[in-house]
Length: 366
Image (cartoon, rainbow, N blue to C red; front, top):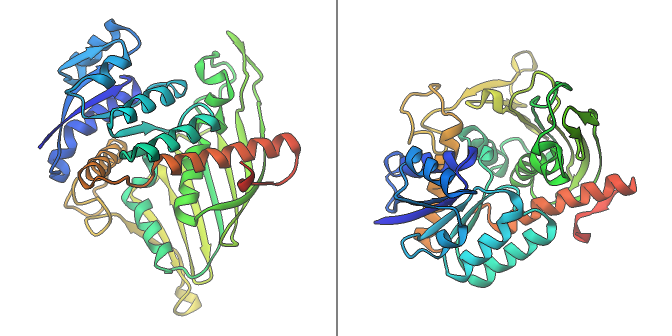
């Protein structure tokens, strides 16, 4: 059965979603087969370039035209954060499912309203947190939920990159406004991972810093790196670090989980490997075991039959597309929903407030 897909935004993530929607049917054999119906960009000229490049049937420079088009059955929002709310609310008013890129909206108020609108309309909704969908990360989540490493006591996470490590890099859109800073851009991915792997966070304390306060072309008005400590509702302690100036780190989405009977380690720069420690057997032979992902792990077999051959970044987006289509087919939202995206934003807001006040903040207050 064909389903018409409209994508708002044709840049980095717009392209990734277009490729994913083109490939997901073949990869996963989904009942719903996406048709690239319409793409929207900031101008008709840009939209036409994206249409030709990605294979859309039509294009527009006005998102309202895309949302209201009768051939567009489901919508992917891959446009700037400040546009998320109005596009999603318009789509829900028409009963159309929405997959929205992270972070959800440009503010806590936005994400709260978007979650409420999705639930009121009872329409399928999902947020694009792709990294937690790697086969290795999904397997880590299964191990934790199954109690394979015992009672969880500690979590450490980071999302570190170095795309602004060089102080000579000119100012750009990423250096303006807190929504585009490290806490707004990178932190949500790892906070989402922490929530997925560990459960709700009860309280946080954090701080952030702008290391390179000026760059050629303008003043930097957001944070270069940030850190937080947290206490999960299950009692475990945690800490997270986020940075866009972490020299040498290209995709440092990494986590460690310690339990009473074992531990898990993962690093996105080696996304097809999971390290597992089991506290069993003679002490002399204990150690972390390197697990190479393969067809025995979640969502891997759709891409390759060979263990250790590996999946890549684009495959994460294809898995995301599969989950979105399955949710539409079932008629019910699939994790992470807009409510889950709002929960991430609550943790971010609490951390920023904590940095301002210099004290712990309860998530329940946000």
